[in-house]
Image (cartoon, rainbow, N blue to C red; front, side):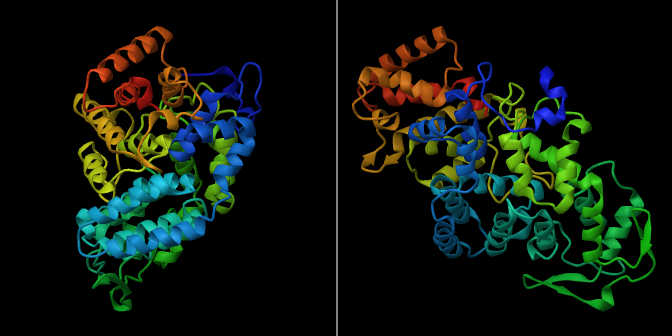
Length: 457
């Protein structure tokens, strides 16, 4: 997909201003909340519509609620769950945090970095270390990548997860070094075999003993070393600085953020992303680049609208948050793992492949079944989830609720004839099913979120 005005990067990254051709409407508000907050209730969308795009983004970047107090409370529950080797209970608490957080953008970015560093408990085998690792990512998710990367290189979970718990002088760990270069920083094709060897030698001396990272100077290879064309006696700290100084690192991170926040299809040319790469390289402040993307003409353009496939976590959390409800997250974590996204267990060091790989005939059916389960078991403030309350004031007529649900979930993106047929069929099926609400609203909602349009963010 291409859109001619985006040929000018300066215009593309300038703040979006609504116009007759590109109005600030329900579609754009829903788009913003899917990308920055998993999803939104109808009340939140109405508030955003009244506020306008820039003020709505302000509220997502810096929520009025006491985020620190919420996170302290959530940290307490996660700390109690972080015992033993399994992360299943920890996974449930992270999902709970995603559902209830007053700062959903922070959790979406924490999920992004979890996929970037792609550390799996299958190798770490410690819920506590994995909890500490994700906490590290959360602390810096919208802050300094420099501080995050330095923290990652001091994290024992990273060494265990990458099979580098013993970096001996006689056996530098080349796979560990390749991951630092290819996945964490520069990207494929931006380094040589000599660079891999140099990084591996620079990290000799680092060992994990009883889940603690320690440095044994006698095991460090301090001989002449050459990294990225520069000679020296490289150590881990100097390697981190050298990698962050390379323009390729900022370019790769910006490209990954573009795929996360704007579009997975048709990767843009380097020149299009270069202004943001230069900005990031200046001091590696992630939040500023995320803010530029969210406020931009590019973000609100047809190039971005529904141009990402929702991951299983995005699908489920977005649905629950849009309902203004809560669900049991232990079973939800297991269901999401079955759909291909097991938190704390990325499949490879490259993370989840994402995009179209999320969808096949089995996972699509699984999403339909999961949606039915979530809708049937969701709890509202005063009992079971009520579809009529989820879409607005109680004085709206019941007959209008199906259309309001369609507006909430699809924002008019389903062809009118298809939508009316779907709503009519859902209401009829629901009325005949004793286990569902008599008015068929749960069936209606389930069919709406099963549409192809809903699978796209």
